Length: 257
Image (cartoon, rainbow, N blue to C red; front, side):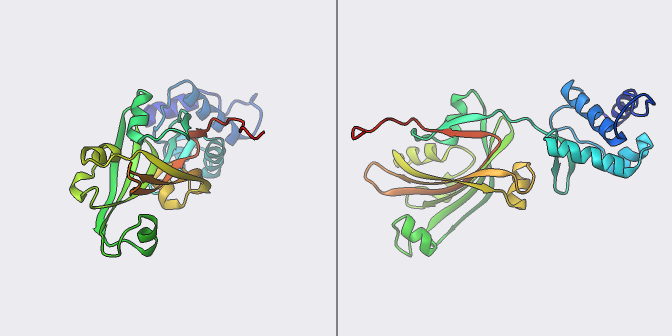
């Protein structure tokens, strides 16, 4: 819906109807929400700036600001730093098993979704003291640091920050596809891993990358993966959108109960 059509639709929804009840900003918020629910405003659509919409509708800027605030709070709209206000892209929640080791790409393909990755940074350097310990490396063994934004059907879902010894994967071999596929192609297939999950909130930079509000809930997942011979092949810290994932585990009663 273009700007002109939006203004026509909003003016046709009785914003100034003398018989209407409630504050004007509430009526504007309801009108905008109705356009979203009816599919006239599509997910990801940009809305006019507060000043522009106020002038076009001949309303006070505070009225528009309060309407936007209500819709941001309800999740109908989302604010992107430096870009403006948009109709929220609805995220279908997914269940992720905690007992099966799989890559993001394989998991998305199993759901019939198209996985992708956008490289945020890619460097090779000596490991930090913590990485030397976690990866069981010598101080002079270089590592590849690969930060990527992971997407499914074009929707950003996670930020992955991986550290991999270059003896397992060279810089030029790591790109926008599955890391596990690349490792397997090199003869270094991860077969088991230890994961730790922590509930966190997103800092402004990560939130902007994931197209959510700063402070939005997320799951921090730290994974250490091993080869069949127990060598550590990967250490990854990932921030998954909290509105997209439910992690589930199957539990069984132990023999001692």
